[in-house]
Each structure stands twice: as C-alpha cells, then as structure tokens.
Image (cartoon, rainbow, N blue to C red; front, top):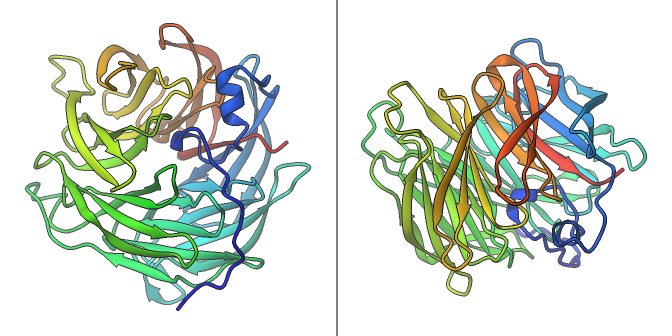
Amino acid sequence: MKAKLPRRKFIGLTTLGMVGLSSSARLYAGGLLAPPKELLLYVGTYTSGKSEGIYVYKLDLSSGEFRHLATAKGIVNPSFIAIDPRRQRLYAVNEIDEFAGKPGGAVSAFKVDSQTGNLQFLNQQPSLGGAPCHVTVDKIGNFVLVANYGGGNAAVLPINDSGLGTPVDMVQHGGSSVNPERQKGPHAHNVILDKTNRHAFVTDLGLDKIMIYRFDDRNGKLTPNGAPWVKLKPGAGPRHFTFHPNGRWAYVIDELDSTFTAFTYESGPGSLKEMQTVSTLPAGFSGENSCADVHVSPSGKFLYGSNRGHDSIVAFSINPGTGKLTFLEHVATGGKTPRNFTIDPSGAFLLAANQKSDNVVSFRIDATSGKLKPTGHIAEIPTPVCLVLSDKL
C-alpha cells in the first residue's frame, strides 16, 4: 500500500542531534543569526508514577532557567517524542505492549499551537511492535519512523491532515547476540535518517548491529541497503546513533559495554566504517552502568553521552580532520539515571533528563573547551525520559 501524499519541500538540518529545530539552527550555530531569547522544551515521560503526560516548558537562553507552560495529559507512556521540520506537529511513542486490544505499542500525533506551543491531541496509530522507544520524522515531513524495542522492528507511518495514517511498512529483525539477559532476540532502539533523507539507520541492541536501509521518502518504504548492516563488538549493545554536522562521521553510544564507537560515513552507498571505540567511563570505575544518549554539539567540535549508574555526561573533543575522539571530562548530572539530553541550537546549553530523580538540569557549555558548568536551574518533572527543543514561539 502506498501513501498518497503531496511532495513537500526538503528542509535540511545541520545535525540530527537537533531534531525539532528549524533550518535556522545552522544560522544560529554559524553565528549568522542571533538565537532567540527563549525556546520551547517538550519533555516525554513514563506515566506509571506521578507523571501526567508531556510537559511543556520555556527555556531562557540567557540563564538556562525553566518555566512551566502546560502539560498534555492523558497520554500513556509518551517516553520518546519528535517534532516535524515545520514545528507544527509533535509525535510521541506510547511505550506499551498492548494497544486497542492487540499486542504492540502505538504512536500519538499532536498539533502544536503556533502561539503558545501547547499540544492538541490528534490521533493514535499502532506501531506494529511492542514497547516502541524511539520516533523520528523524515526531513520532508511526510513520514514518521518508529523503533519497537520489544518487537525488534521498525515501522513507517504516513503523516496526513488528521495526524497519522496506518503504517505503510515494517522491517522485522531477527537473531541474537552474546548477552544472555539482554540479547536473546532483536531490540530495535533508535531510528534516524542521514541528511540526504535517503538512508535510515536502526540500532539494534539485541543484535549488536546498526541496520541500514534505503528509504523511499515518497512512499515510505524501507529496503535493505547494499551493505545492510554494520556489526559492533559482541555484547556492545548499540543504543543511540547520530551524525556529525558535516555528514561524513557518525557515532553510536553502546549501552551494554559503555562505549562510543566512531565511524566514517559515505552517503552515496550509505556505508559505515568503524574507526575508533572509546570508553564512556573513568578508568577504574567498577559500578553498574548503562549508556543512554549521544549528541554532537552544533559546532561539530564536541561529542557528549549519558552514563546511567555513573550518573554523568561524558564529553569528548572531535578532531576536525579525522572525526576521532579525545576525552575531555565527566560531569555529574545533578540527579539519578540520566536518560535523554539535548543541546540548544546555539550550542550554549545542554539539558539533562534524570529519570529516577525526577528532574531536568541545565548546563552551560564553554564554546572553546566544550566543558559543562551547572547553571543552578532545575525543573522538577516526574520520570523525564526525552527532551526536545523547538524554536516555534
């Protein structure tokens, strides 16, 4: 079945780490446009405890202070969220194992109020797999792609006037790896597109692979790439994947063995080649840890990752000639179990979501060194999981 959608203008972003921000992000990062004074911040959560849904805040870009605006209530486990290129719609996974009486999770669509940033629920559709944990909007704004952790697959849903249509494609993974507790089967954890919108990458923690697909952005179809995957070290557990702003390098954070793996990337064939693996932990650390999220700074100079257990953000500098990494520092996140984090488009602030201490903490980024300093501003939000910034104010 084909999605009959109008061809839309391609809207490029400078980095896949800035999902939800307009193409003006490259002007902020390049110093050609003064950044706005405030940004909208959307916070996805788990609702099994005190959380009521998706929280909407304003972030003050002079201080890093948070101000609560609204809460979109009545949404079950909107753990991961994404905004379309025009910042008119927001999409959230519903991280559940049963939807409408059938096995699997769901994806919810919302309209973003152009004046206030508040969210209006539109509709829900099945994700075609249990425990969906990541969602991406393609760069034209025609399709939503979702990774189903429990289902071990990725699905594509068309965007329409009503919100989302029923899925038009799904790719199922199969196999296992060496960790007997976490890798008995496939666990798709992340799905992103390269800057050309022609290749989709699905990290599979259960297989120790990054699956690579050709993406048809007219019909929403995923087909195996010529090089259909890249294999990670057994037991690595690749979780989240991102590209450098130049499009020639890419980085994955490996949940199970607490490492970063760096790659060179050729966009024509959609091929990745491993060039370096480094630890996200300090030497001698012997506690339990699992990694969560990864982002490159808008400047392309620094790479950051979150450690759950060590409860830190780790920072590396990126060699401008090779893309390889050099350790900078570890910074405590001011809470427990840092999950997702995000960086504003000017590269001035990093926000960290501490899932098990119910808070979001802001840090100022030193533009020269890449090091982080807490601003002292904290937002108390129940079980924060995903942070998305938008310049639609």
